[in-house]
Length: 271
Image 1 (cartoon, rainbow, N blue to C red):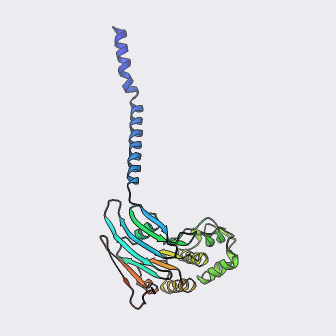
Image 2: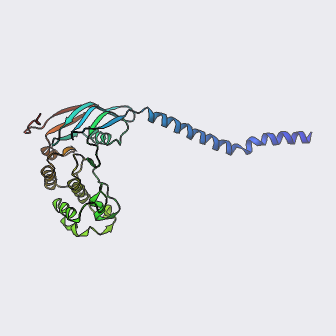
Image 3: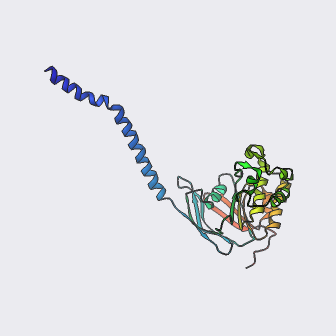
């Protein structure tokens, strides 16, 4: 009887001894199940299709933006910009201005519709409020998205001078953590220097002059319009002073609604 009791005891002890293993297996299964569900949900997300415009234009066709919970940020939007046209996007905080630009950069998955834009290398640039600053020397920082050495020092120095950073022109060989060395305003001016050097066909700017005073903001926008008259500009800004550099105005009204019009004093684009 004692041996029978021992056998029963050992058998029942298995569950106690294996409890930690069972708990680990259960946790692993829950994580795997969550991964499968997340993958399935990602496959069911709407898709923004990007195609080459061929003629240098930018066109949004039925572009719709939502929040992760499904709330409407931007109702289906149709707008076409010809080479040289400019559009400013405004609206109250939380209306979806930055999210719309992130959607067009394919950084926001809750977007559907079609975006036609120039798709050649560096033909379209997206400038954020805080530009990307790669590690390396200043030559690498200013040249981005081109590789270091692809742009002559003469052109780099000229671009720095144009954006009021001539004091950095002789420091191209300096290797530092430039993201910490440069002030936010200097980083934003570096971004404009990159635009001048890259000469894209379309530029999307998200609060790209927020760290600059209005005088410097005016000078940089005027510089880009003068140097790149055929480049399409799409700007997001809280400042009314930015509007003067654009011909068209998209106002996000909230709850998906929007209003598109022409800024007073600008002539219609030629047909």
